[in-house]
Length: 219
Image (tube, rainbow, N blue to C red; front, side, top):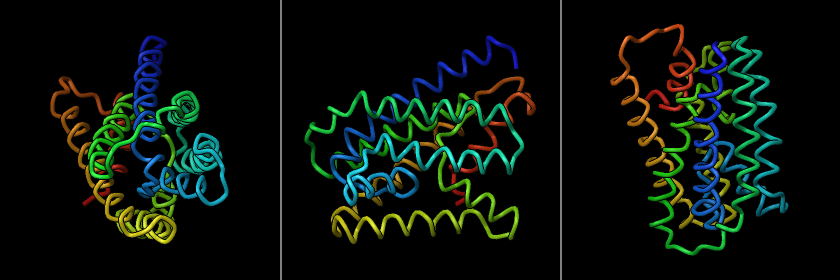
């Protein structure tokens, strides 16, 4: 990859990571919405054992990225994703004051889904991911032929139900709303990128395709 392209991708990833951190602190963390995946696990850990989301995000994401790199043998993807994970954690620390902003659960679930979905999509455009339980699902699919979309739903469902046991049914319902909006936002934005790409080069954009398939959940 050319240096200019790599620097451009890093800028894109940084913007996406900042937007993700804002969405998590402003709408997810302060409303205790366990939306599934690593973010949902971090929200639960913060409430259960008082580990800051910025710290638990890094602790969980890095091993998952290592597993994903081992499975795909893609060093560039790993480097950019490690950077993305670090930046999300840093921005989570820098924007933690946003957790003091109050809003209704409905507004939090709607805006949280849209903002997080936008942030994730921008990170994907940079050819990276922030790590997630989708990595485990990918390994299970490759090694044991378990359909990834089913294992992803099992993982997300387990996290959401765990959150409901801690935070209550209201949080469960709004977490589901947020997760649906997040997933649909990523689908729309990443699909739009594919549609408007001209002179598409599969070798250049293969990372976006790989990660896009992960986040669309293969519905």
